[in-house]
Length: 168
Image 1: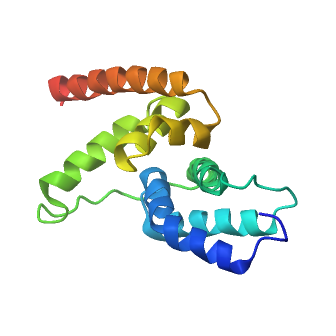
Image 2 (image 1 turned 180 degrees about the vertical axis):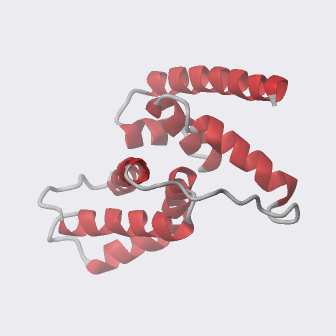
């Protein structure tokens, strides 16, 4: 966003995209507070960036910044886990979350094992309901690549989930 763009324009972008961007980040980081932080960082970067976002590409820029921020947060978490002893895991009660929550968690865990582009395409498509054009714009790839990554991701995801059912 350049200095000639007004705070009213930023307010409009925030109002139009904030919730969807938090949802996108939460697909990666699994915690609303961190998802909100990643999303707010994206807006701050756009506002204070020394480069100019092309008019009409603000939403794609924000989605891309949120994806990058969420991935960065996951990398930081992995490093912290390597240098900190693990706590004993406690199992949540059966009432918490329910079957739908468990299924969502199982699918998200499987998506996180996919290659980065495949995971991003599936999350943007099926959790945010973005079009192929919007996904291509967000990830900086061709629409045909979006289709390929989606096809390969779904196939691999199906294999992972069915394998889990067989061995689970």
